[in-house]
Amino acid sequence: MNGFTLGTPTLVCRWRIYDKRLPMEHRHIRALSARVVNGAPVSVELAAWVKQHVEWTLADGAQANPNGVLMIAVDEEGRAAMSLGSYRPLERVAANDLLLRAQSSWREAEQTGVSPEDLWVVRGDALVWGTSPEFAPSGASSLIDDLARTLGMPVKRDEDLLASCAQRGIDADEVFLVSDEHGVVPSSNFAGQRSTKFAASYQKLLSADRLRLGA
Image 1 (tube, helix red, strand yellow):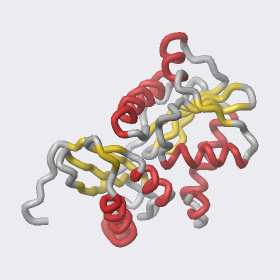
Image 2 (tube, rainbow, N blue to C red; image 1 turned 135 degrees about the vertical axis):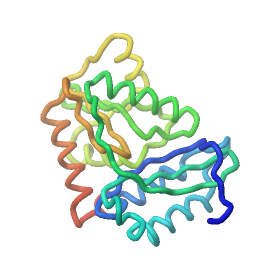
Image 3 (cartoon, rainbow, N blue to C red; image 1 turned 180 degrees about the vertical axis):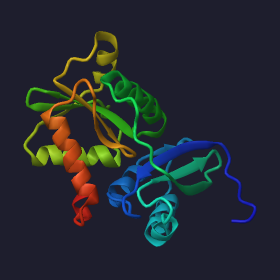
Image 4 (cartoon, one colour; image 1 turned 30 degrees about the vertical axis):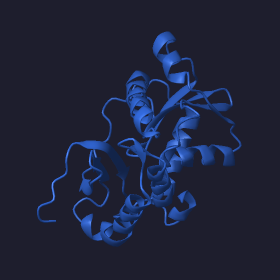
């Protein structure tokens, strides 16, 4: 676009793509629509613009990075741009590293209403999701919430989880991060059967032909 310049981004979404497709497209668009940018809800026009470009141009544009990251940026004047980049897995995945990422995303959610990365923990037979009832779920966390309930695992939202882990240490059997960009990331020092199963199930859902299961 000749003459187009994007200003300082006030909202950036990073969504993982697979085989030149955007799994969970409807979940991501729904989470985008729930966000607040520059003090106002994301417009119907912006959400429609993103959806149109994902459906019409993503496959051609992702030739160089078929399994990369789709980035949507909105600046302070409401102008938006999309770009594609390569994917880099997380290098540090200890529980405290995942906690730091979740804390950063929490601060983002206080401004936008959606946290792109959430900390989840396993305690006994239950899952605890470190989110606030005031936040709308990200695409990835909404999928894990639904998957857990399908498997018969109760899910509890706990807005004090992050503060508790930071102040008193990790009190859980397992810890994992759920991220729009990185999927399900079990911690290296609090991993276990359930978090590993969620990671495998998530990967299977994204890579299978039955992607609409995650819609």
